[in-house]
Length: 275
Picture 1 (spheres, rainbow, N blue to C red):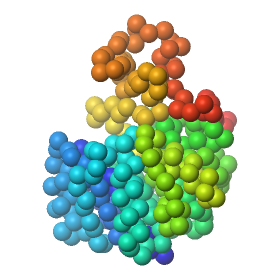
Picture 2 (cartoon, rainbow, N blue to C red):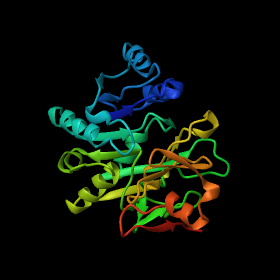
Picture 3 (cartoon, rainbow, N blue to C red):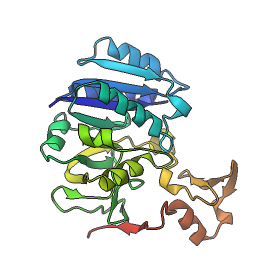
């Protein structure tokens, strides 16, 4: 088994060294490709310095098309990674975000031994009290979002609708599937399933995403987007609306909930959770 690891990077200098330290320990890696998006910090300098002594072959691709290193516009990056994999001989592709701070060094082995087309670990928020599942934006089970505090847990890997943040894909699945914006991870998984591949998640395999709010960073989750009008919730007391700022006190509670958990397709439902 040989594995190409793809890592989008952008404006992550604050925590990038922590991620790279963990990446150095990752087993079963054949090659790592970083896709660098134009940053306002020394992300690129840190990457270039690290590659001098990297424990495996490393490539950096800069300036992806359309400023694509962002959560809702990253499809061109994956399309480029598909071509890179196509030109290589790796049997698998591992996608992992650069803000994953903790993951087992045998992560690839743990995922690969499940023998699935596409499989993801559970993504938790680092040092969160109470423990919180991170990727409620993308993980779906039976058309429902994963609950942030009680995500589905069957005690074994199980088939799901979609995954993101980190996943292992077979070469055949990754190269066969079309990916598009603005929902690249969901389109990848939906198109994979339509193409006869299966998508799985394993709650026993846990990785931990950077807890950004303590650093003063408040991400705007893709799934907080409402299509008409396009609005984003940034986990602050305000909602950004058409490039303006609206105080949440001026918006009815039911409207806020619709903004925060706005469905991205007609079949999306509320959270699913297991007690």
